[in-house]
Amino acid sequence: MGHTEAKKGRTQEPPEPGVVQVRPAAERSVNLDDWSDEELMLAFQDDNDDAYLVLVGRYKDRLMNFVYRFVGDMDDAKDILQETFLRVYIKKDLYKTIAKFSTWVYTIAGNLAKSELRRRSRRGKISLTQRGGKNKDEDYQIPLPDLGPLPDRRTDASMKYERVQQALLQLPPAFREAVIMRDIQELAYEEISAILDLPIGTVKSRINRGRNQLQALLKDIYD
Amino acid sequence: MIDDHHIDPQAPDSEEEFARLRKLLRSLPEVPAPENFEQELQRRIQEVKEARTPWWKGLFSGERIFFRIPPIAYGAAATVAVVFIGYYIITSRNVLEPPPAPSPPPTEQTIPSPVESPSEEGRENREGKSSPTLLPEKNVTSGYEKKPEKENNLRMERGIAPAAEPLTPERLLEKTTEEPAYLFRSRGAYDIEMEDSLAQIDSLVSPDSLQNTRVPRQIKSKKKLPPDK
Image 1 (spheres, rainbow over the protein chains, first blue to last red):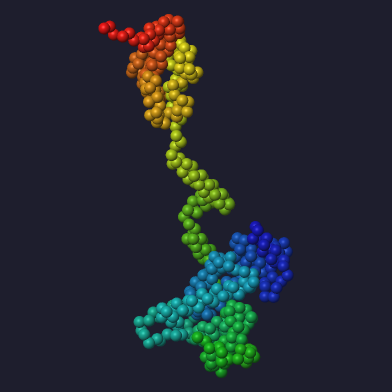
Image 2 (image 1 turned 45 degrees about the horizontal axis):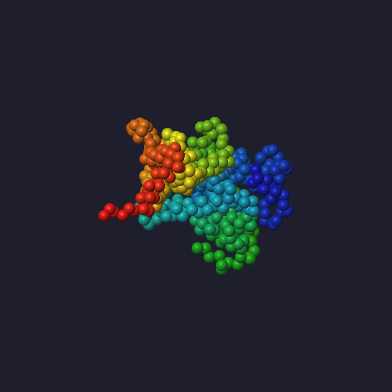
C-alpha cells in the first residue's frame, strides 16, 4: 500500500518537462477505459490485471500491424506480439512513468522484431521477396497455399498492397522500422526518437533515405 | 551499419516531397491481431507463472490450504526458527562443558559415632582440648583432598592410628550390609573409645594413690642402693 501511496504522492508533485502526468486515483473514473495508458500501467503494477487487459486491448492491433509490416510474416508477427505483451506482464515493475507507455511497448516490440530478423538471417530463412538464393540447401520459407482469390480475380488494390509490403521488406531494417513508425503508425518524430534511442536528426535522415529507396522500388506504381 | 552522418540531420522534412508515397503507405490495410489473442496470451502467462513458481511455494498456495498466507507470516516464521535454533545451539554448548565438581562426601566427623563415650569430659581434660575432632577443621571440609603425611605422623606420635578413609554414604552402606556391627566402627573411633576408657580410669583413681605409686619410682630413680659387697 505504501508503494501505491508513494506513486500517488509522486503524481501530485508539479510536473516536470518530459514526465508523463498521471492523475491521482481519486480523480480517476471507475471505468478503466477512461484512464490513460500510464494510469493503467500504474494500476497494473498494483496487481490490477483488468488494467493490463485494457492495455492489451488498446495496443494489440497497432502493434500487430507494426510488427507484421516489419517482419513480413503473420505467424512470426503473432509470436512477437504475444512475447511483447508477455514481457509487459513479467517486467511490469521495470516501467517508470518518466516515459510514455506507448514508447516502452513499441521499444519492446521493435527489439523483439529485430531479434527475430537476426535469428532468421542466421538460419538462412529468407522471405518470399528474397528467395532465389545461391545455395539450394538453404532453409527456404515454404510458401503456404494461397486460399485467397485467384490471381486473375484479385483486385488491383490487393496486388498493390502486396507490392508495397514486398518493397518495404526490401528496405534495410533500420530504414524500414523508421518509415513504418512514421508513415504507417504515424508516430511523432520525438516518440520515434525515444523508441529507437536515437537523435531526432538521425531519425529524420533514416526516414528520408527509406522513403527514397521505397519510392524507387515502387516507381511503376506511381507511373 | 547505417551511415547517417553524411546526411544533414537538420534537413527539412521531406513529407511534402513524398506525399504520394505517404498516402500509399497510409492506405495499407490494417492487420489486426488474431481473435483469440487474449485467450492465448492468458494461457502463456499462466504457463510462465507456473514455470516460475518454485515447488515449495506451491505447498502453501491458496489452492491447497484455501486461504492466502500473508507474506509477513513467512518472515515471522523464519525469525522464530532462527531464534529457536540459536537458543538450541547456545544451550547445547553449555551441556558440553565439564560438570561442576561434586559436593564433598561426608567425613567421619559428620557421621555420629555409634558408641557415645561416657567420659568425653575426661578425655578433654586429659588432652587439654575442647574440640572433640581428631582432624583440624580445614581438613575435614575437603573430602577429595589428599591428607598430608604430617598429619598421619602426628597421629602416630600420639599413639592414634592413621586417619581412616572418609566415610561416604556408599561406603557406609557397604559396611552396614557386609561387615558385623563391631567392625562398623573405624579404627580411629575404636582408639578414641580406648582413650576415653583410660581417661575414665584415671578419673576414678585418686591423685593420692597416683602419688603413692610414683613415690617408689622416684625413690628408685633417685636413690640407688649400692650393691652389696
